[in-house]
Length: 476
Image (tube, rainbow, N blue to C red):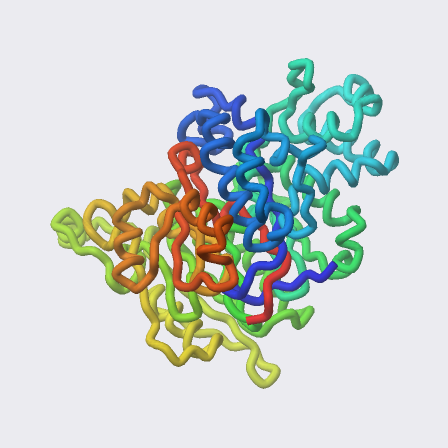
């Protein structure tokens, strides 16, 4: 299988997803924030009314034969078997790839199964003797247990990993190399472990094994007092990594990604000559920002959607001006951008004053774009909708092909901003029907923002960009 991603906007050809599993339905109010949720979700609505449409859309663009002409049958089925791995009706695509399927296939190897059970028992601090009974489980049952923490009989052994729906965070393709990420939060460490077992052991990734990049702890941290180790921790999540051009990687320094991890990744990629330019974008370490892909993503070579308050066109409100006058601005909350690049064998660096200057430079210099660079602002840059809609992922869009991207239907002002910028905004349900009736086709669609139902998905604090792990795009 081929693996290559050298942009955010070229035609998407293969990706890894994870459909909402029963672990999402186990999130309780008392644990919601520990498990990185702001609220509990209604699982069946999330699945049937929202995420299933995301899957159908992906199949139409990436693996049309799996769904073309079958929509009525799928939507009229008595159960959701088409969307459930292990079910006889499951779509089983080699282009829209379910993480659960990959893990199940890895567990067919008894030696790997033993190793993984031992590793999970260690990080979850469970009794290995008690977990030995898992060896008697079917591969499908064991896979679901490792993801949800619970057996089909209802016995709970450890917490679920409900954030696995956001597959972007477990790793990212950087040209023909793959970076295995290291999550910052305890709630996500089992995701990282399962991802390592999949990428190091699954047959489809055999050609990628020599090109896997891991994040290691630095030597100094081992010798530091425990109460000081957090300052030097090496953590990085995929929402903070964007492959924006064949030679250029963005890494966010955020609530979830440390400068130490970013520096380590940059050094490894430069040493391997994977690319020649890395830009570090430090955003405020705030929960409402989380990752750089929650505050900006690219839609076309010359079009970006972003939160205006971190760009050049920052909103100026009386409350902000008052605090500026009082001199109470915390410099740690400011945006900082530092670019490192190799030129004539020498490593150099420069800074950017603001995000928009960086994005213009990527479009014009890296992607050789001749058209004027456009910015679409969250909430149409109307107070208070910019911040309000950014919270529900107005800036977190997945590009299916250049100019065609997936967003959430609840961000009305941002949709207006896209329309003002010349995009057609369509509802996913209407578009799928048009595909079935041959009124429209993925091949001919241009400059279109496709809106997913999102009442429950948005509660999970991630958009379509977060819910995707592209492993193959056409070359930009």
